[in-house]
Length: 259
Image (cartoon, rainbow, N blue to C red):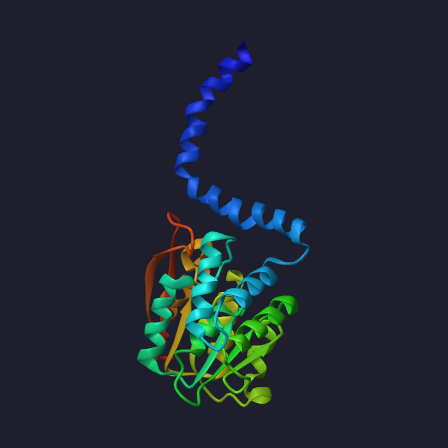
């Protein structure tokens, strides 16, 4: 009787927590539990599963069809963390406004954002997309090529970002980065930004767009851009991709250099 009474006493608190954090429970279910079950059942990775879905449902050579199919799978089947369609419109707008010729993407994952970037680039532009996980990079390569982009437009680099940034000039002939999209490990945002600052590859007007700066969050990165005096900056408020109710944001930076 005593234990039942204690349980009943905690029931309102439990219900309150379930209601308040329901979106996080949904995220945990879709991103962790469901993925674990599907990994066991299918014997292949989540990234390979989304590729198979895109391969059988999208129109080859049509980037819009590839992205729409990707979004459909992430909404209805399994959750994958990438920029998604709503925050993707912010990326699209910036690319069209600035028309960058040399773009660096940190965090290719499955290739969704690489396709999104490549379709908006002007003729002759080039995207260098960096992914440290070999298996993810193999999926991304297939997605990007399925969308119709060759190695002259999108070059995938399979190495950690902190190894790639220092050798972009020497190994890849990059003299200036017009646009950088960051969507890799959030703990890497600040050191990689500082590495870019010291590389001499950022010029006046170079744009940096960083995803998920609110959730999971990159507080040290945001603190640096506010205090450094190197950037004009703003945070675009948004919701986490494919999960309503979880607030997120993207940081837009325009490099102005040391004053």
